[in-house]
Image (cartoon, rainbow, N blue to C red; front, side, top):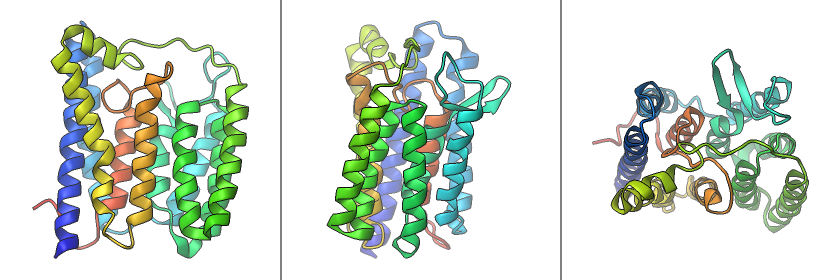
Length: 279
């Protein structure tokens, strides 16, 4: 019963925090005269991803295969056309999604000790590709999650190996040129909101924070403890990265990949078969 309550609370916290951050981001974009056709996309993506995520997770389809698929999707970004030598996207025509943001949360939430070597090999491939794209904010979040999950699967030696590899990949990633300029309603959404209203900016940041810590409400669930900690670590790192440089702001800033990725990742973590934790 206690686990049921913790699942219900975690789902409510993530749902409220993530949706509020998205809606406040949309409001900031609207106040900045960003077209409706742009700012409406994040709320629509949240609704669609929530429905799909609950459906898939309730049937237990988020397994180790999801990690292999994540590695393939991220690998496909290297054969895309890219932008100014940066290769972060997959898609066709006008629909271009950030590969790492789209699949990393699910890969983290799907990590299982039973087939940890398959997951670990996929994680190494994923990290190497992200470093080469380059995408420092996604790599930093993924590296933190990897250290936690490798500790869970392989003990302190696994954590140390992940830590050393993470530092090496981050050093390589920092050496790659990244000439892309920030966009006000993507990387600069928090500043945009604070300039319009301090209350809007503070509430947006608080909502984002609630979404970040919501997986931690599952720490008492023995089978989910490590994955919950890893997912919060990834959420937190990618949310704090914009404070250190021109990196996308998940959820609040425009970006369908971040919205879909976060929602599907949380659904993979928290939704269990044959139970309704929304009531």
